[in-house]
Length: 326
Image (cartoon, rainbow, N blue to C red; front, side, top):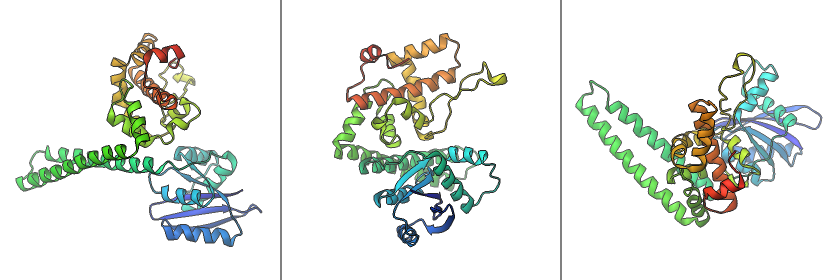
C-alpha cells in the first residue's frame, strides 16, 4: 500500500506520496472539502486507489481530512506529535518546512506502521465538540475574572467586563443544558455516563470529559492502552543520578484527560476504598505525593475501562476479588 505523509495546518495541508518506485511526490491542498476532492483526483492521476495516510494529532485541524480518507476507503493513522518529533531527532532532521515534515511523517509511517484509526461514533464526536467548547468558555470566563480583579480599572471597563462575564455565564449554562439533552438523546451514551459516575471520585463532569476525550474507551484490548492514550503510564528513569528519583508520568498523550482527572484523583485517594488503599501502599513505600496522584489518575482510567467493558457498576469488593488494582 502506498504511504501518504500529511502535514496538516489550519487552512492547508501538504502531502508526501511514496510511489512504488520509491520516489516521492509532493502537493499542497486547501484544508476544505474542495481540497479533499482535489487530493482524490491527484491520487487518481498517479493511478493510486488506496493509501495509508498518516498525520499528526493536532487538535481539530485534521479531523475532517481523516474522516474523508476513512470514508473513501483509505487506511488512516493519527499519530501523537511527540512520536514524530522523536523520529525526526533519530533522523537528525535539522530543517522544518511543510514539505520536509510531510516527508518525515511518510517515512515514519513506512517504518513504524502505526495502528489504523477508526472515527468515533457521531454522537461521541458531537459530545467532544460540545465539551471542548464548554472548556473554552470556562477558560474565557476565568480570563475575564482575572482582568476584573486588576487594580486601577476605570468603571466603564469594569462594567464591560461584568457584562461579558454575565454573557459567558449564560452561554455556559445553556451549553451545559445542551450536553444534558445530548445524553438524553443517546441512551447508550447516557448509560455509559451513569456507569462511570458509580466510581467514587468520578462525578458527572469528569465522566462527561472521559467519554468525550478517550475515544473508543471500552474498545481497547487492555486498560493500560487507555492509560497510555492519556499519557498516564509511568516513564522509567533509572539512569545515572536519576536512579532513586521519582518516576514521572510520560505525558505523551491527551493532556485534556490528565487535566480532567487531577482533582478527581485527589478525591478518590480519600473516598474511593480501592484507590485509597492503593495510595496508602505507595505512601508507605516512600513515594512522592505527585507520583501517588499520578498513579491514582491512572487507576481511575483503569476502573473507568473496567465498568464500561463489563457493563457493571463499580463494586469495590468485585475489584478486590478480581485483583484489578495492583
